[in-house]
Image 1 (tube, helix red, strand yellow):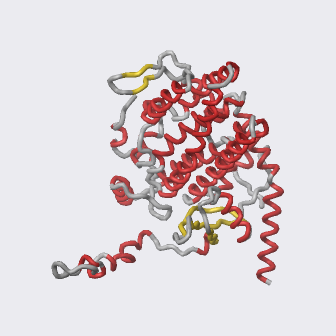
Image 2 (tube, rainbow over the protein chains, first blue to last red):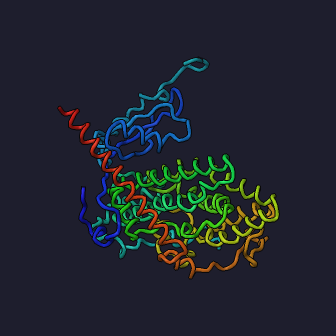
Image 3 (cartoon, one colour):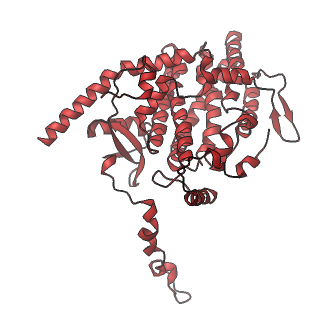
Length: 110
Length: 332
């Protein structure tokens, strides 16, 4: 993969053709029973390669018990500008929270 | 020196330096979010100037982690014991990982790592001036852990609260891992300081050479720092260069005394009123010389990075070819 950028013409002694590899998102589970959480990303050419890079970059300390790698392009994310209407229904339905309900005095274990 | 609340941070927006494309209403909304302490995420709207400043700052930080592997890597084969060698290998590997965390955070701003690496290799990107000094003796490795990682922790603890989410999260991860870097350095320094007269002289010499460059790591003085006011207004940085530098000095002076080492500054004295260790004038000419490419090892460091990149090109090409082959096989 050759790139003809201003930077490359300005520096003839820099390394020849470079490759970028695809981007993968990495999720780590830190301990049994914990959720998988987004840790960051790696570049890799295959899923196996992504898994190896994710281990080397995000699991050097032994806390991680499980890894997920996902091609970045496969992730569908909500759009910040839609956050209002998207999440609004949650805000005006107080009856979804236990604090909404009245309980007779002295009753326990509810 | 102890300006905890620089007025610059509350200054009026610098509209002249902002890209013209930014919609003032969006900018106002963005600045209100910053003022409310909200975290900015990659898909959120942000001023072009905020994006540019972050790309500059984060990529410089990532480059520093990568170039920072070189001075210490120089001693891996000559570490005095297996224990020290294992520790140093783990530390240098961490630096590579830290570089990758920050490159990955920078990529969320819409720039490819390849382009950032190109900028480093072409010499158009900066990295921390500290890594352009040579590691002349084994004691330098200990002093780097103690001073350089110690200074980095002071800086990164602040950056862990940066307004840009991916940067802050990378800093949290790095801070957690970096504590051992400082501790192993100090342990090595303490061991040498309690050793033979030759060992003690060697570690004192390393302290003398690394002290001032370590203070320079915090960047120019507040009055000469072109980017500080803007970065603080946008809460990328929360404290000024001089405030952080003072914190590092206050932390380090008692640590030096505890192992009987002196810091090479005749003006260093405790100020009862402010409870700070006041220090002498930094040689800013040296700082600017090193930053602009004329430090003792600038050329050597870049040459080493270029060679490593070039030597690795067949690996990158082979992995790419293998990936393409696998993809074709999966499609068939």
